[in-house]
Length: 300
Figure 1 (tube, rainbow, N blue to C red):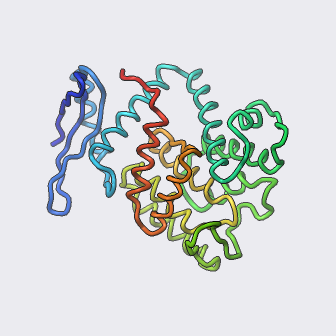
Figure 2 (cartoon, helix red, strand yellow):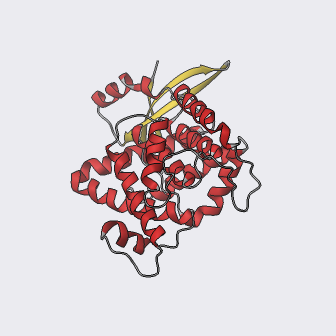
Figure 3 (tube, rainbow, N blue to C red):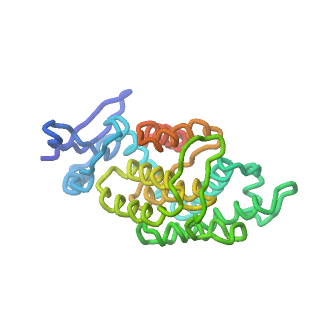
């Protein structure tokens, strides 16, 4: 039976719903963070009734990391709820700019954050920024806006659609799987043969459907890493990978993650490890990045 548990940290009261489950002949506790301070009996009762939704499988996240993610999730949505539509709209504009700048910069764009904002928020083309980089910025924001209104699930159609939007005016074969071999500059990773792409992508969607019971952050991380290891497009794979990751988080009511270009080397190191089937590094990297992203949130 789930029960209410209180943890004290730095003289602050943290509330959890806890359930003990048996996993591979071992007992373990699954926790859901439900708030700080003194909670009403009605809220605790409601959380106990809804707890079954949290009984998800985790392979890589520690209990401490799961607790931290739940704290960030609750604080983030409380922040948006208190701020209303105005704060939510301003946050999206700011965060979309951050995501667009960093995701494109990771792939080599020279447009800085201010120039990116000029392109996607003001409709101004800065000097010394190539036409391709202008399209990359505009298209990335269009992709984010598309996902904001999209209500469906992850499937091949969505993946191709995202690539089609991202590569507008850049790649005439946008939205189509590659028909040629590709290589990653500076890496000895061997990518799949282009003839295997259709089957590998179908397998990827099957894997996703079979693993929806994973914790949303694990599901988002693993799906995005498995996608990028297939590398189904000639260009734009990294950007599609991060969009898919964030859509899974958003769909499951978790805050999105902005991977900073300053952390590019650590990120790519974690991606390379994931290509070899070692996912611990990317999970740890994303949890630490989540902490950096939402450090502005205060205790309620």
